[in-house]
Length: 188
Ligand code: 5GP
Image (cartoon, rainbow, N blue to C red; front, side):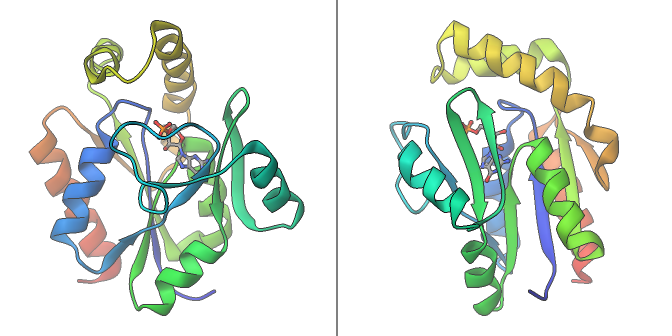
């Protein structure tokens, strides 16, 4: 597989989905790589657009067939992964794949694509701000929020392994900063 790719990782609740949407609007060269997951869809989420929603059995079959570039049991019993067919499909259309994955997935993709990948880590301003955003989002139980916070602490430790770290204190500033990094990397 030839071509450049962009990877964005951020702890859950760091504002990543909003950032990704804004970036796609500003940079029409990018196309979102739709991950596979076994978690249930949230109210507004559509199959094939936000995620490929699979059963655990379907996901495990893809693992056995070697269909994933990377996959992970992000939370116990909840699998997330990038199907090889996604970047292939996107590159064929002449677009640049944009991957939105967790920090471990980001590092795994970077290991495969190396200098063809720009991997960006989006940092929340503070741990407390992250917790507040998760509570405000209203999609997760308190138990789930604690689980996501534990994972966030682990992921923050991986941030130095990324090409670029961007602080998301002010959304507009963060989007502009990420856009500039991408433009520089893709020579746009
Ligand atoms: P959420 O359930 O909030 O949509 O996502 C939970 C976590 O899984 C987020 O950190 C998200 O970036 C990550 N994630 C989404 N897709 C993938 C993927 O394909 N691979 C990996 N490793 N993580 C993913």
